[in-house]
Image 1 (cartoon, protein in one colour):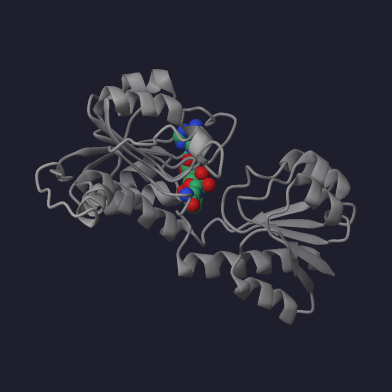
Image 2 (cartoon, rainbow, N blue to C red; image 1 turned 180 degrees about the vertical axis):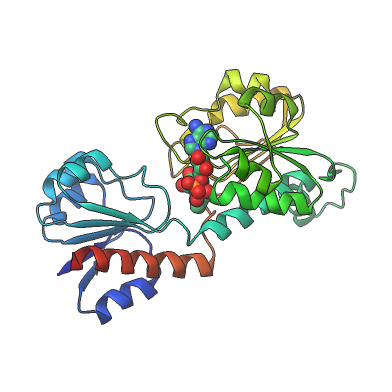
Amino acid sequence: MKILVSDDVSMKGVDLLRENGYEVDVKKNLDEQGLIDCIGEYDGLITRSMTHVTEKVIEAATKLKVIGRAGVGVDSIDLKSATARGIVVVNTPTSNTLAATEHTCAMIMAITRHIPQAHNSLMAGNWDRKTFTGIQLQNKTIGIIGVGRIGSRIAKRMQAMEMKTIGYDPYIPEERFKQLGVEQVDLDTLFKRSDYITMHTPLTKETRGLIGKEEIAKMKDGVRVINVSRGAVLDIYALAEALKSGHVAGAAIDVFPTEPLTKDINPFLGMDNVVITPHLGASTVEAQIGVSVDVAEGVMEALKG
Ligand code: NAD
């Protein structure tokens, strides 16, 4: 059986597939047409977030039995078309949870103490100890939107920094909030009370555009906004406006509505109250190995039927 790996995935998973007798081709950076042209020969497809498995790709995938997503978000896959064709979609929901959690913590610290800006200033030959005065996290309130695997771990880590944690998640029971020590609030209350707001929902019909101009206007003056979930959850153009006006004091963003975020569509260019990273949430050695081995196992299981 033949498997196509169309994104950057650690070789550990690829080796595992080959050891188990699967023929594996690694072809990165294929556009939709490139994928359509070759997908017909494969029984399995393994992707990360760069490959978009569209309806047209699925139509051309006459032998395809399984799509493995090395990571959590399956929003890059047309699930409806895949399901209609009986193609199984497997993901690796837990293997990069810690990586994304720790990246979020790093982003929170970076915008709180202006670490990238201070670093750049010193590297440019300046010794500026005035511009980069930060704030302390203790006793500040962090509002967590989506208190699932990552959101709940953010709560635990930010509680260790002595922050107050409040959260909005309509799909988890009150009991779970209590267990986590997170105060359950509605979205408007979260906007009103939070000094920091961090998003950890999946991208769904309901969460697409969840945080736009109107929602940002409801946030506290001087709020700091973090998004390491999915780009389309947050309107980065509305955020950039609020950063310019000073209503939002800082932002840390790892994910963007269009990726890669090229210069011509980057609303943050030249702004000094923002820290952005190119979708690095899952980029740790441990997570990359974890997702590739987990996705390989999931794909093999599906192919064995
Ligand atoms: P999860 O499914 O464990 O948790 C998501 C939570 O969001 C759930 O508790 C769910 O009830 C809640 N939710 C769903 N709809 C909601 C809504 N409308 N309002 C509020 N809450 C809602 O997922 P997870 O593993 O914690 O991942 C969270 C997000 O992080 C996903 O979007 C995932 O794709 C993303 N992620 C990003 C990276 C990265 O590289 N930046 C890495 C890993 C995960």
